[in-house]
Image 1: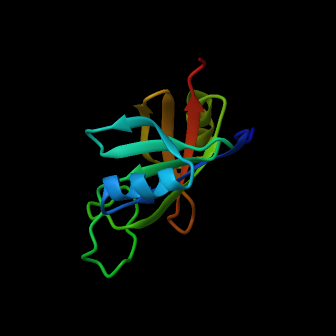
Image 2 (image 1 turned 135 degrees about the vertical axis):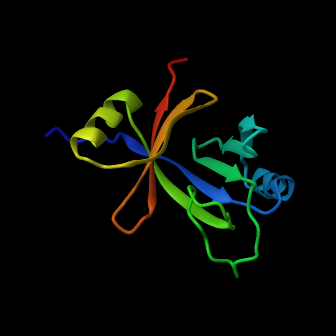
Amino acid sequence: MASIDLLAVHHVALRVADLAAALAFYRQLGFEPTACDEARRVALLRNAAGIELALIADADDSNDGKNILMDAAARYPGYTRLAFRVASVGDAVKRLREHRIPIAEGPLKVGARTTVAIRDPDRNVVELVEIDAA
């Protein structure tokens, strides 16, 4: 079977308790918003070097800071996933099915991105991201 051709680490996603406070902090580090999804309470940011962050504002702290992964109902502050850029989410989904790797979420369209999420054997979330051509 052919493997999925990973192109690069795409971004780091963080759950945050207060989106406005997180945006203010990361702006101080040179990040600027590139897209927002009000319904999902997500802000996508990028700095001049091309480093990307996704801030997800659906966190609470009622679990003593323990992170619950994205497809669980309870959401907490912390890292949520490793994201790899791919040329085609459609092709990646085909390969995932060939390898019998279950899809945890997606494909989803957010701004210029199409994403699909899977889990590694330790239940860590891995996201595959396709960027629309400009």
